[in-house]
Amino acid sequence: MDQLGIVLIVGVLVISAWILIPRIFPHPQMVCTRCEGTGAVDEKWPNPDEPSGWHELKGQCPKCDGKGKVKAA
Ligand SMILES: [Zn+2]
Image (cartoon, rainbow, N blue to C red):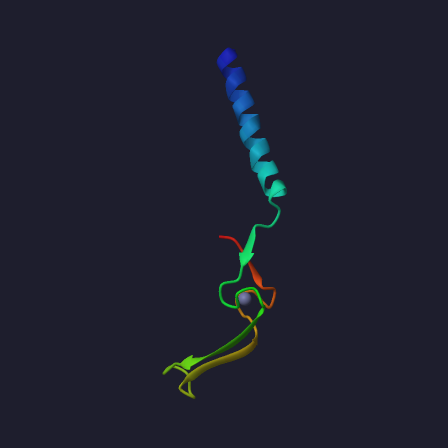
């Protein structure tokens, strides 16, 4: 009976930690590495796969959709 009680308490603790931890850290986010948090990109580098021979991208960052932050993995 004692062992069952311990198992029960540990189980409740694990479940409440599982529920509580995401609430304490609601949306773990980190600064977007592509736009460095600005949300906008101004990229240009040679890319043979592109028809123009260049990779060109200016404006909203496609990685974070212009938010400047991405969800931490
Ligand atoms: Zn970005």
